Image 1 (cartoon, rainbow, N blue to C red):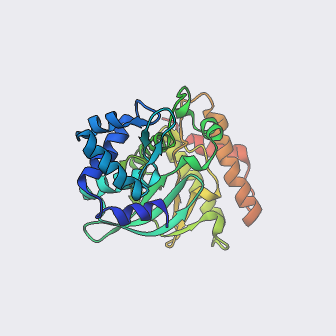
Image 2 (image 1 turned 60 degrees about the vertical axis):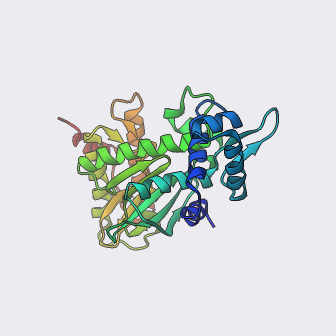
Image 3 (image 1 turned 135 degrees about the horizontal axis):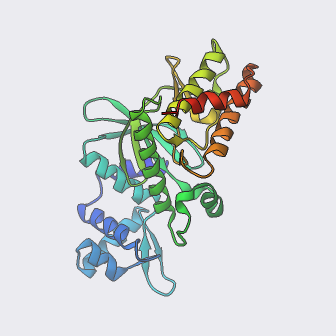
Length: 297
């Protein structure tokens, strides 16, 4: 069972005081590597003995990590972080139930989720602790300068950045899943039923699909953003045959010093895939001009 599924199964079973303790630990993690008991009590608004009791209950449910070296302290794990995010999304009436897993990757899990109105959305849980700390810092410039930062906070920053990118792109007419809400390390968005471009064996008129990807990269560029991790793994082809660009937490601004280099890499990755799999040849310089011309005001 994944941590999201475990959290969903516990959502109706935890006491409100347990949630207060978890929220207290979350607040304390901004100040401490491991939050001491007295601070857990302070931030949760509970007496020391009461906080100790509920910490024990949370430990039984595998909803925190405890350290005893030097002093007794506590931090959240992904089970509890998922629980807090799901609790907030349910309270905000964004979702009312977790559905089946859609995709499980190195840096994120994606699940279907049910809405209170009977609809279906996708919820993405960012999980940056699955890659090395050094590699994460190298790839994600929004972590530069932050010496002490937990995996949970890294994942929250990734979710915030992706939600910003999706909102900006969607409002500019880029074909991306519509974003609905972000909470902690999660992003709730439109569910697109389809397949990664990398998994598609046959495309009718693949030239048109390549052009569609480039057109959408151009719209994003016109809106001032560059995907920065574009490949056949970050393009969805819906069951209706529409292209969607996904996975935006690494995007950069068009004014970034490495904007041209990054855009060129994105374009070459897509051209290489279409050349390799569908034998479609397109000059990289022509494609670059096509995409950048969309951004001229």
